[in-house]
Image 1 (spheres, helix red, strand yellow):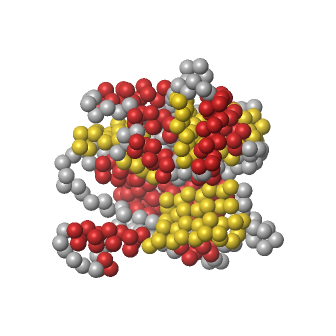
Image 2 (cartoon, rainbow, N blue to C red; image 1 turned 60 degrees about the horizontal axis):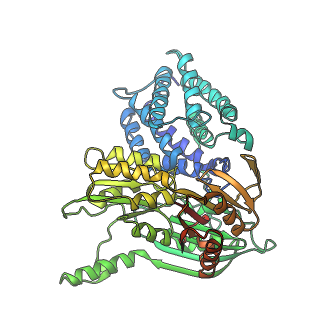
Image 3 (cartoon, rainbow, N blue to C red; image 1 turned 90 degrees about the horizontal axis):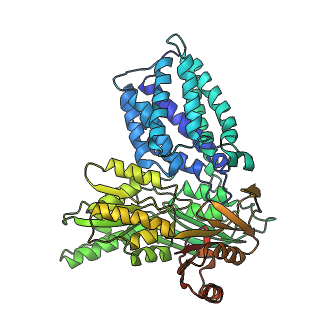
Length: 564
């Protein structure tokens, strides 16, 4: 093959997306940090799938047109840092296709090099030993060796060979990778994308292995959740016994459910699993879950009917009477355009857990975007929230280091219409303090400065369970034990008991300058007796501090702690 046109490129993209989909659980498993948020593969998979959907119905040979449509889909669907960087790689790739109906090996090399440049530019502080290193070294090797006489097959052989070697070298560039004994997960995800493209170049095609998300013995298509309301599905299940039921793996279970729904929360406490998911086919979800245990409690509500009932009541209020069933459904992806005059300011926070949502509202946040650890919102999710806020200036609080890039990308998309200011909060408690420091009497610029400054006034900590045995930063971590984590990344200790982990965390965070302690209890410890237990400990141990202990109902983290 000497050239790539639009039709071939579309086939390459779909093959790449399928290959990543077939292997994303393996990519998730490479995450260094042993917390239950191994979502690099999932984020890249959802990002690529978003781009693929946009070009699925194109059959033309317009290379730039296909590339631009694909790039736009990636941009809007990007989730997590890995997904955003992937979208930027192909944004740069597409930029180089302008005015070209086809590209040869040199054009391919220039496209990947352009992708490298744009991706690096998108990251404020690029870190080597990551996906950025893999695209940089692989594209540089191809750019150095590509000639106009070279075939596309030969070009991909060079690109892939260097990408493999670069990925193997990532532990030498990022010490924590070497300590844990893995290669970079984002780089591994990129390699799966390049592999899928290479298969097409060499005359093949990667089919999607639907067995990865097999439900009820049958292959299922990925959930198309934006077009219908579906069912709010919740259940509590007791696992096992293993002699009768399949062995439960939470990462695998979560990945399967994520492929068949959205707004997913999965919480495991020993042999009890709690699930919340929005899906079009709740029966399939129940059948799949029952392979691992038996249900204690089930709940399933038709959100379409709820939506129609709301519209029905609204119509009746306005004097127009009609049956709820007669009301036309409006897709979730098409929010109403507000005719109301714009507010001067609005504050949006990314949050998960009804108790955490309530804390943000008390702190002055106007709008909540559901998401966080294990379920990062997409760029498009954040864009919709900003538009619906209907304000001249919108402050966005990501409250997670893996969401900041998506928030910045949303800001850049809307820059010509709305003044969006992203406050780079990396934790829930940073976001709460920043929201409390917002003052509608100040200018946008002054608020930005005050809110940014407030981030350093609070210490953040979490307690969560470990998903694997490892040694990281000199701490020995055992699977299913509980880690005390400071500022999202520093593991202080690991304990069999989650309350012991909380005590260690508080002991490290509280000092003589501390005045206020906030503790949010997760869904696995959401009990008033547990609230009282934590309150009594703080009252006895830290007599000079005020405290606020409440049920946050957040998944993943048993306790979220803030100290001011």
